[in-house]
Image 1: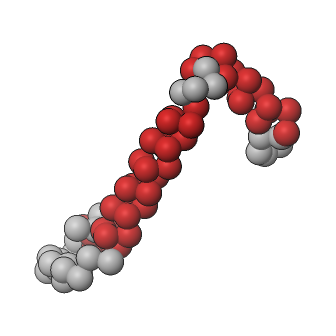
Image 2: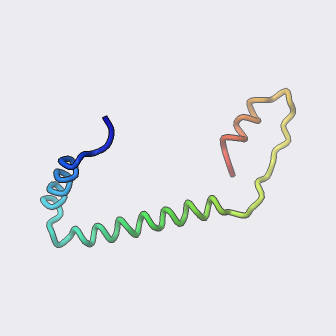
Length: 74
């Protein structure tokens, strides 16, 4: 159980051809590629952000706040 096999891909291509037509598919592919590129660039910008993270002083009596701080980056 896992990925899409060859028959699944063929079925998806046929459905896309029926819905959009052969003239529209290259335009849709370009738009999808541009969208993925912009998303990847934005994600990389967030990961490479040089801003120092502000730390919240939490006393040892409040371990739930320490856990929440580790899960939620700024």
